[in-house]
Length: 476
Image (cartoon, helix red, strand yellow):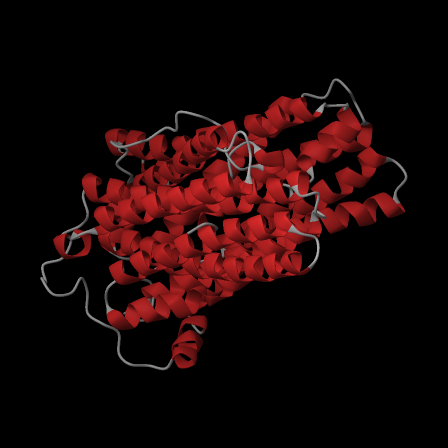
């Protein structure tokens, strides 16, 4: 089997960028339109995005389906087509909601719910299979760098779509929203078709199939087999806990800056940009460490396990800093530096976790790579959905019990820090790969291809900033 070279990795990165392009319109732009232009309760887009996360529980079934067929390309293309249809229907639903507050309003809500189900299914099918293809076709020494390239390209897709679509949406109208969303969706599907054309057969010595199909084992039996593997089960729990901590901070960081430090909306938005800039630095640090490791012969520098656990510990430390800022209420606290450190730690942890997942996908019973990656993706998706809800709910509860706003936020940050510590302990107990090729992956990562987005703007908190890379295990 011939491993994918950098041109093939870049082509998969284009697919990931297309995923990001549609997702940013549906989870960020439509969210803003419903709340601001249509004056709907924020709960409505929140529930719709929650549907998109809940549907990602189907990822294991998607991965198992691609295992059985032995090819990932049909699932990538099919998932992108479903995602594109979901994006268009979501924009159409918003147009219906804008027309009336009576029948059509409820019809729009119903159509929106269906659209977000399709969005979740499309992301699950396409993203899961893309990750499996990366894990199986990328040579071990390049996996960390490949993960960095693909996720930075996805972030670039977020940023370029947010900027381009934003300019095309003014002056706003439901018809213009539908036209822009439809154009982005069609373009994303066309780029995906071109990017994956012949890619799977080129990376394999077998002309008819990229890999041997899995034995016809029923899904739940295969799921029980994978769950019975210590490494797969422990990594699933690790992903869930770490992603829960990771996502819980996102919706309360800007309100914290405003309530405790008096930041204006513009200042808090720029603070989110500082955090996501730190994420990019953390991601690039992992890839650069792999390059230095290969040049100097110091494998410890590029240990994916080390970056994953170190990122968790550093994230916990940064969250403790935010908690101290809240408890003390010190206005001279270096908040921006603290948030930048949090971003760097999150970025390093994200790429370390994704690279580790690529290593561990083949650990265990053969022809179960898609099921394992799907299981981990489902854990991530559910954790992200719960994390945003749990973070805001915990903040509301803390404010109800604690008079001082700073102390209320601090208690939530402290809990998130503890979750990162728990994740680090769980991650330390996961067995490391033992094959020669997988030890090579720990020894160093080729970073000859690193793509940096031209703009740091994307769909983060309050409609700006970049989503973190392990959201990455999110929008796949």
